[in-house]
Image (cartoon, rainbow, N blue to C red; front, side, top):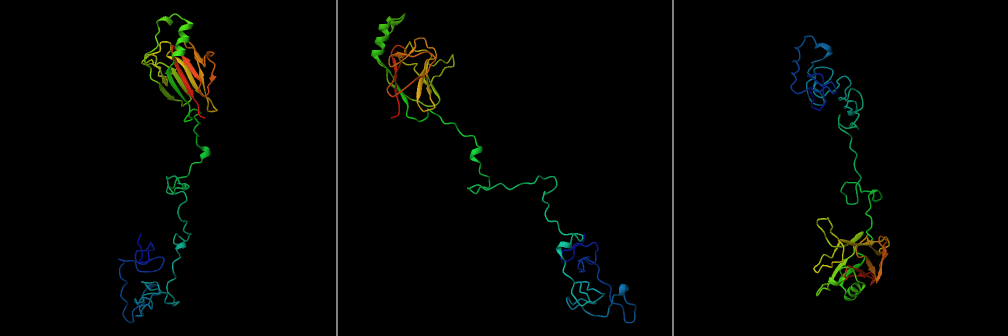
Length: 267
């Protein structure tokens, strides 16, 4: 569709339907007729009068260049952009966006200015506290001669053949997580206890899963014997199988033939 110098689209190819300006490339107006000849059709005049606005020769009731109204003596009326669309107001941008495209809503801006909404902390999954993590609890494992002598004195099918180790270095373990298993690792059984006492030297009286240290909700720890072959003692008293026994600073958990775990609790 042709466009006039002011940007209006026109169905006519010579003059704009809106403002009357000549459209670029349109044929020039026919020359004014000689004196005494008939006036152009439509009542147009070719008297040699010039448009007072743009200086173009008058060929009709309106200036063909700027649309000046010779009869009223006024310039062409300014075009109302609101009426360009067939006499209807410009509806503005489509609120639904282009056809086939879902409307996009702007995210809220978070404190960092990234343009992304700040997650509501109340809607996020909160990590559960680890009652045994970084609370100062620990256990020192050593070979105790007095405990070994009491085991030998109590007798048993293998007591006479067991010898106290000549050297057994102390090992220290920090208590963390929900539980810590005490025993000897067994790849064939898939056992990897957190407190592995496989040695050397190896205490023959320790089961592969001998006891379990369990973290309590109040931050303390307890010990449980799940059913070891030789039982578990706390401060010289054998505990009941399957029943957690609370632990305190300095408690001695005795297992096997000579192994003692000394519990360290925070002050």
